[in-house]
Length: 432
Image 1 (cartoon, rainbow, N blue to C red):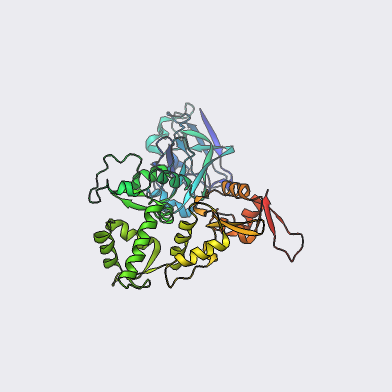
Image 2 (cartoon, rainbow, N blue to C red):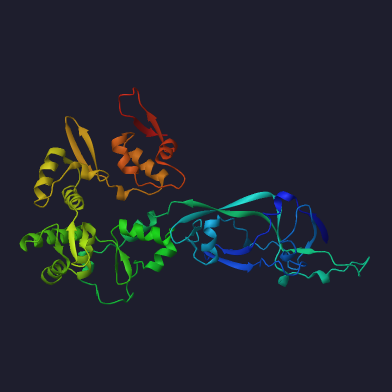
């Protein structure tokens, strides 16, 4: 069947796609399958070339392609121009497991994929190489006159895919790595010179993680750094709290015995002492410096301990068994931090909560690192912990929430109710 189609002026710049894509949501693959060459000198009959230079109010004949059908594997993808180079150069990937909604990731961002239906008919017309040519069309009334331009429709699309930038979905990463943290028990069984993956069930390599975690490469690496994860024998691990606490305590003791300044720790000497004298693997000794310190001189390989990170680790050690009366906690904390470091309760924001029992104030562990990264789940847990929050207590626990297109004020409006009886009192936030 051949139908003549008139092109309205407003549509001439929008209806001609340059690229087709095949989506395999089971294998999480995206492939560009057809390029339509934008060459003005190509033949103007048979395929997409026939309509590339169409003018407003022109007409064209359309017919069914010999392979016309639903072609469910062929979908339209609407892209922002800034994303087009990444897609065309194969710098994107679909990520997630079969039971999850797929996301599309560039090197640095994550996008949800939404199907948007349309009430208009959108025709997909392939290039002439795969279309019936104009000379296949026979005009029985006058076969001698010039053949009309003819576009063969391969598929009628009911809509297209759109991309919406979203926050990376990282809660699963913490769950996976927490199942098998590196500990003293495993240290004795590890061969730190081997790259073998034998007997490493329950461990995850980088390739494993990019297949399981719905985040871009940049976002995934940032999350691994935030978890203080380390790559051991090709597998990403988090280190058991007891192991890290023991490693830090030994490092601090060595600094005192060897008269090393906390502001200028010699990397080579520190690692050598921890490895040869104390039995810690060199890789873990180096990891300890990166977790609790900052490199101050690349050439001399000198490190400075971060006062806040060290003091927070000491506080966690004191609170590992539960809540402690504030006065007792502060006295013990100040006694146990290294000489020359000053413990301040402000260091513990987003790591502890306080509560009043009778006339006494108690402090207990409540770390932001244990909270989910999705706003809805985060606020749900916070309001189960406390039904009402003052802003100074709530803000440290939502500061890290990042939702593209939504500000911190927008998050509060969406998930909380604000009450402020008088202008001179602090606002109170409760669940919406």
